[in-house]
Image 1 (tube, rainbow, N blue to C red):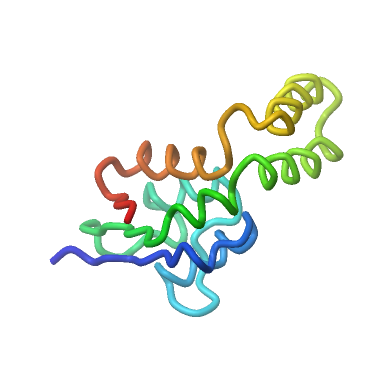
Image 2 (cartoon, rainbow, N blue to C red):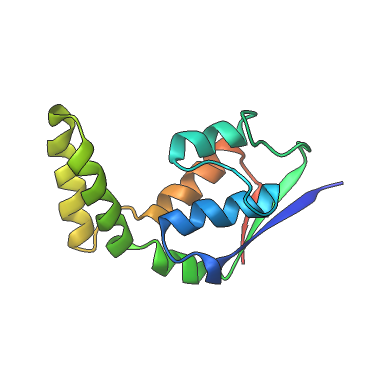
Length: 128
């Protein structure tokens, strides 16, 4: 039987909130399902926090609200935070991505999350 995990898009107000919402959707209140893209990929691929049942779907309701909350503005905010901690050799490409986000161009956090979910578990993400 396919288990459906529901992300309520109206609850996703930024990246930190997304990690909380998906963790609770999969593993209940306070549940963990990654706090960064590497951890999310790990959870989807069998690491800590992976759903017990291999037959699951992630239904992202009101995903358009999440797409706005995880748009270029939030992407730029997160890139600024990362840029402060980045190794000096990584700063130029990160600065380019930040400049693109500030100009309203390039992939957003929403795009990256969807790409990660689709890439790690093809066919399990439903946007509604």
